[in-house]
Image (cartoon, rainbow, N blue to C red):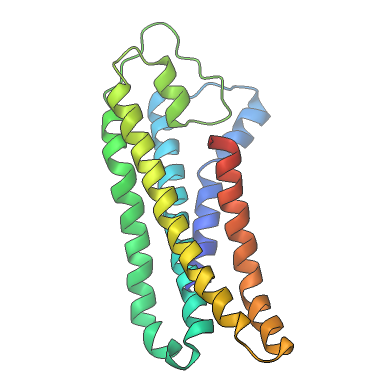
Length: 201
């Protein structure tokens, strides 16, 4: 349950980094935001989002071990290993977001400072900047693609092995139970990656 607890904490944190500002905007009608607050909001939403993708990959590995190597599960996914994997997810989230974020701090804005978007994000902020943003745009794309592809490959490999193992089970009851173990995680993975593809690609 340690991985699920961390996933729940990430979801709460991700929601908390956006929703209070939305509620303030709705309640007051004031849609303005300072650049500093915008940077803070973008930083936390991005860190939590990237960390979530890495955690989903770790959770798919956890499902792989539970189904493909059930007798070794306690040894492979010990409490110590789970804590280290979660720490790696958070570290990866920070390391991937920090380089592009450092360049955002020095952006200059000339004419317009109005973002026609529902929250602070890299793309709309870069569009209104009068600084040269080519390098930052490329860095953001590389970091996003790296996160997306790397974690998606881990998830696909884990589930490929899981499906191969499940299909080898002799009874239909065993197969059904094994699939039901993974179904909730597969739904979350589908929603997370599907919404990301729908919004950004």
